[in-house]
Picture 1 (cartoon, rainbow, N blue to C red):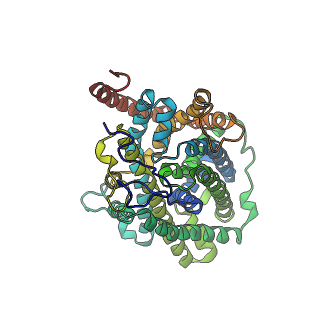
Picture 2: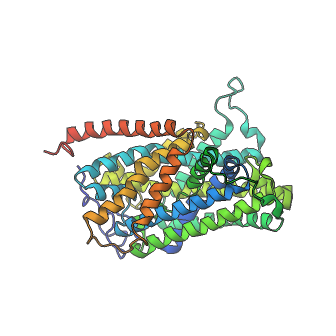
Picture 3: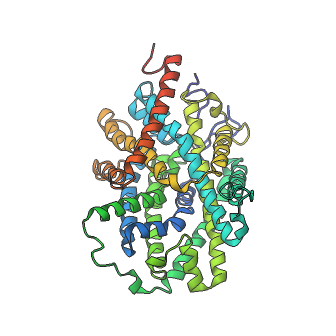
Length: 472
């Protein structure tokens, strides 16, 4: 079994690349941390899902879903901020769950379940971004939407091939040291903010306020209203996710006790303002009943002309690319942390000998994402959200309270405001998402199935290795 001391993840801010065995280096400051968070958050998601949220809510009252999603993100973000500042190591949730529930006890089981579900959800999330990139490319080049084989009209399309190729390019870009990656991140960040800026300027300068009027009885407290709000909030919550990306890079953050909480909260506030402004700018130009998958590009085309619509489609592709870049960078550190701790396959603990990044984990997640690029992901987004809520977020909300009770003297550079309200309100918000939608039971069963399979694998492995609950 690998020991945590076998390869020090955090030797200190003053360590040099040539000192001792390969290790992660603390080179990410606040500006870079916020940039990586927001790049992850503002992917292709909000540009494609805005029409879905409007449809679920039935009109311009869709703004409520964005507000509820932002509120849940703030409450959950305070939990991430406290845990990330207290345990600034590579791995994020893996480290949190292991320490909360016991490093040599149930924490091994809970953190293993997290890694197991991440092996599916992380590559699927990356693949969804690459597929979004390819779908917007098909708007510019319609032939990409054609089947790869004419005799197989419902099979693989050229967009799937482009999505997989995009994932391969991102893996190549990340296969280098952290300093080069951070330089590329700023270039990608510029494109993301340019896209958001054009959308906001185009919409807000051509706003038709009457289109923003809320229909009569839009907020009637009926079962249909809550079902629509639950479905819309699930999508909005998915679009906000990413504010915690900095926690997965905890072993590479400078002054993590201050940087991690600030990066989490700043990115939530900034992205919430951008999403709400984008919602107003699009709904103020494109009537709710005319919303389509490319509503954002349609709005820019109506206001700034067809050439601008093509330009914004290119920039949305850029944001999708940037989001997958940040996502893969963060999640590649999680299998590394688990393997270093002896709770995952040993090979994932390997760091590149010169560039000091988890190369095996990066390549494995990238390869899995390339495979998933050939699947249809639209129908499983909700299932992925539910799986992650059940097997990660709920465990952390309960866990941060348990940690306060069991280890009150544990050093906490950041203590969440208004404790214990944030975790309790986040729990309530996630519970609402889980139970308010018609498909909730089916998606909850998906989460149970993943938990059962992961549990069988863990207990079989633990029995063989003499680990909890079979400790010798």
